[in-house]
Amino acid sequence: MDLPGELHAAVEADAGDDARERGGDPVEGVVIVVQDDHLPRVAQARAGIPLGPLERSGRHGTTITTLDIDSVRARFSALRRDLAFFDGPAGTQVPDEVVDAIARYLREDNANVGGAFETSVRTGSLISEARIAAAGFLGCAPDEVGFGPNMTTLNFALTRALGRELRAGDEVVVTRLDHDASVAPWLALAEDRGAVVRFADFHDDCTLDWDGLAALVGERTRVVAFPVASNAVGTLVDPARVARLAHEAGALAWADAVHYGPHGPIDVAAWDVDVLLCSSYKFCGPHLGLFFARRELLERWRPYKARPAPEHPPAARFETGTHQHELLAGLVAAFDYLESLGWTAIQAHERELGERLLAGLPEGCRLHGLPTMEGRVPTFAVTVDGLRPEEAARRLAERRLAVWHGDYYALEAMARLGLEDGAVRIGILHYNTVAEVDRLLEALAEL
Image (cartoon, rainbow, N blue to C red; front, side, top):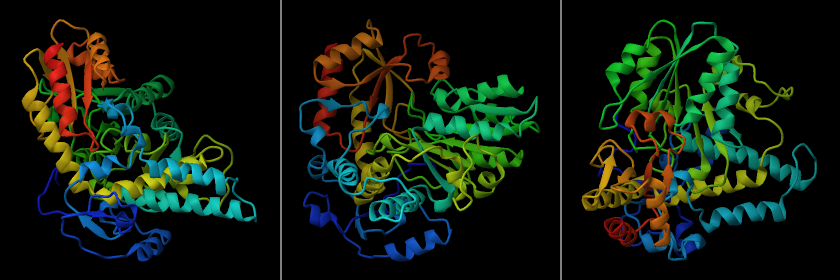
């Protein structure tokens, strides 16, 4: 099993037939393979058959292997300014087609579900479409996908449902690479149910200590929770390897793919994880969380919520209140946007920019994490000699460069690295350019 995000030159990624109609998609000068199997996949999804990752869905049919960065950026009104966005790990910019989908729903279809009239019927169809599209993105069946306001809220809901089954002394293993949204819910269960939370450490190069993780997993382990990619230092964690380790002990593999989401294809079936959560505002969508959980778990767990209608799919039992329908419309558009580019093209572009940044970091900047693009996503934690992270970020902001500073809720990672004030986080996304990276490197050298 390859690490998520590992590149293979021979692999081609899907894009959209409608790309040529938009007039701005990067399809010129590349080999194109046409197929259109969207309708068979929808039938497959409605039958409850797991779907492969979105990249292989063939929903629109064309294939691209490189990005035309000017065409990509033309799809974002937000990028038509001199501010260079390296703050993507905290939330990406949104293409106009996502904004338009949200507005179009509110203008034309706004209604609650359950009515016999047309806007209510269309809203019900939108929810089904969103489940099918999300299933294609995650690599699962539509009835195993649920939505909510954000990953943190969803994780508290799911961990609370599992918590009904935990007994005092049951153990949950997390890592010090985790975002606190993957740690705090388990600490709450430890307090309420008497569970024990154990922390797997990482090495000085910010790679996971696999031997240490394996030593923590035992007969009382019920869950191994982990990030597919660290939001603090960019390290990739092999989800299939964690899942094998967890399952050998009879435990669940519980994945946080929030930070990995914009950087590569997710495939819960191939990874064999039991639960996975992510957030669409990290991959050019609206502020919305989504999750996958195995059907047998969803049917067994009892959620804390109002009594659900019996016809609801298993994942819907964990959704509370009325859906954010307009955001579901934006979510579907975000999936279509990513598919129109293809993961191979996205990853190749991000890798090129990441290598350029790593090669050009000035001597006054200390990198915390892997010094190459192997085993990581293009998210970089740096500290600048003589400057607190907040001051460094402020000076970069004065130069129209958006970076983040602090601990980004990666509390354990920052404590492990001894970074009391956190670090400066530089996040590269597929819509960034070579010129922006060079601007950033020049500014860092002048701080």
